[in-house]
Each structure stands twice: as structure tokens, then as C-alpha cells.
Length: 354
Image 1 (spheres, rainbow, N blue to C red):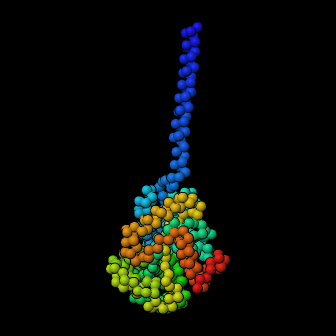
Image 2 (image 1 turned 90 degrees about the vertical axis):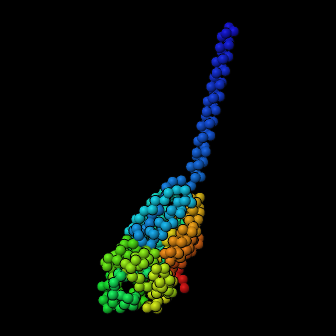
Image 3 (image 1 turned 60 degrees about the vertical axis):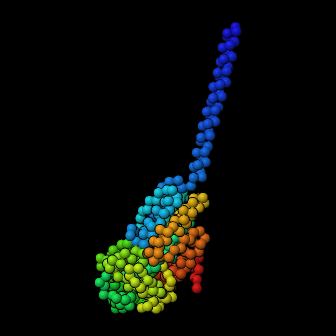
């Protein structure tokens, strides 16, 4: 009996110990899972980021985006894969970004074009559907021609266009693109008519001018500089009202020297930035704002902006919205007054600023 009682006691003790071990194991398992759950909800982006450029490789928007992306990578601690999705004046890239998850892992590297999608009936989506992480820089436009062009001044080009309405081939990136807007300005103040030939961005436009497939084109100065410095193309003028000293080119004249009526539109120019979907979580927006803000201020990027004769901006949030809406008002009404918009800016609540 004593022996049986002893075995019974031992059995009870073993069961108690096994139960205790089971509880400890369960406790450890729970402790491991809980921090993992917290990490998943607070870790922010946590993966490779895709930066979608609206325009083809080699253009101003592409060049600026690829200049800042490696600097943002260092701040985020994540890789950024930059890809180009040109088409429909950048609307294809914008729609692609809107179709992705709102997790901050797909960024739109955009120029100014989405501000005009509504009035030009390009897309029902635009900057209103995006959050501006950083508008990092602005630029000037340049009027370029082949290196051995017969045009020596903007006046030569305009005189030929007026003498041959619709026959001078002028580059374009589609309605609302920077070359389209500049051509509209020129037509509005001079009465010249151009044959606008569409390309997928500044890079292809520079190549087309270099190959003499176009008589002229407006492009972002950033995209034109290297070819101009190499003597492969010629810059007739800046779309600006003041001259600019450019290293390797000397003083580049403003369009107003030949066409003073252009002054009413100036200063004007493209801008470049990074956007995410509006409903991206606030903590991820802030993570991106911080990373892009620091990268934009890096010496390497500021040197790039200076070297390409750009304008450093570094705007995010409300400041960025105010900036692009002012640009939108000026440009949308300019195009409307020239008779090229599909819809009045008033229908999109775009105020006319004086």
C-alpha cells in the first residue's frame, strides 16, 4: 500500500510538472508572437520601394528622380527601384500608382502635368488624389533646335512658322505637357501655328531634335544641357524673362528679348516631386517626408540642382499643395484663355489668380 501510494504521489507530481512546463512554453510562445505583431504594425514601409517616373528615360523628370533616389535610399534604409511608365501625358503612371496598395512602397515621381488633367480631359484623376511627399525642385524650359538649324533666334522660328502655318514640326509630350504649354504661349502671343509631334518625354525630344526629326522643341533645361554643351543641339532661348549664365554655355538669352509679349506668362516652368496615395497611413507619409526632406538637403542633390540650373524647393504637405495649386491656376487659365482646354477651370474650382 505504501509503495502504491508513493507511485500515486509521484504520478501527481509529474502531471503538475508537465502542466507547469506546458504553461511556461505557451507563455514563451505568446511573448514571441506579440512583439512580432507589434513590429508588423509599427515598422513603416519595411520593404523595397518602387519609384514610378511619368516620363521616358533621359528626360528632366527622370534625371531629377534618379538623382534624389539613392539619397532617399540611405535615409529610408530601403532600396528604391526607379522605373519609367510614360504615356498619356503621365496619366498612365499616375493610374498605376493609384492601383497599388496604400503602403508607401509605390511612389509617383511626377512633373507638374497632373495639375492639368481635369481641364484638358486627360484623366479624372490628378494631384487631388495624391499626397505631396516632397516637391524637390523646379526648372526652366529651353527652346532648342538642331545644331545647324537655320534658326538663329526665336524670332527666326516664329517668322518661319507664320509664313508656313502648321508646317513647322514642334516637339510635344501631349496636351498639358511642358512643351505643349510653351507652344501654346508662343502661338497665343505671336499667332504662329505649329505642327505638334508627340514624344514620350524630354529625353526622346532631345534625341529627335539631335536627329533632325523635329525643327524645334521646348524641353526642360536639365534635359538639354549635356547635348547643348557638347554642341549637338542649340538653345535658342530660355522660356524666362531674364538671361542665365550657364557653365559651359555662357549667357543664355531669355525668350522676351525677341518676343517681349511672352513676359505676361513669366516666370513659369516645370517642377518635379514625389507623391503617394492620399490614404497612405500618416506614419508612413511622415517616414517618407523625413527621408525625402533630408535627401533633398544633401549636398549631392543641391550640387545637382545647381549644376543643372534648377531651383531648389523642398516643399511638402500644405506648402507643396499651395505651390502646385498656384501653378495650376496660372497655367490652366493660360490654356483656357488660349482656347485649348476642354473644360473651364471654374468647373474644377480653380480660381483665377491675378
